[in-house]
Length: 140
Image (cartoon, rainbow, N blue to C red; front, side, top):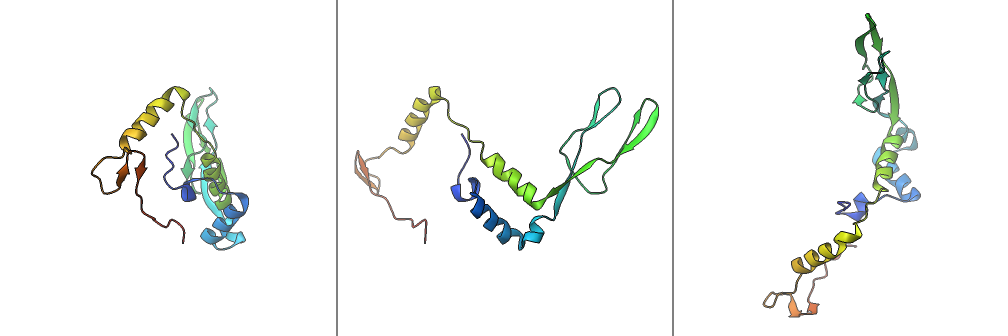
């Protein structure tokens, strides 16, 4: 339900691990707060029609020109997003965990049991309740 394959890279980091990640990625505290990119602020016409939606990633020179009530207007409403804000947004998105609805749990368990069933004759089969595994040494 969450499409998490590698919990070390796709799971939200605790505060100290997040800080260490930022230092490792950007090199210094100063660079953590450098500009990562710019995003648009919402631009609407006098009639309330959205000309530019909020949150589009754009270059620092971005502006939009449009007609409003017979006059040409140019708007350049941008928000600066720092490296810290960018990385923090990713961390916050990872904190949204979706749970499997209870009505689908039995179906999911049956599917997993079918896929992982111990099959007689396989190299790892010991008995219906026991399968031989390998030590894959996740941590060194």
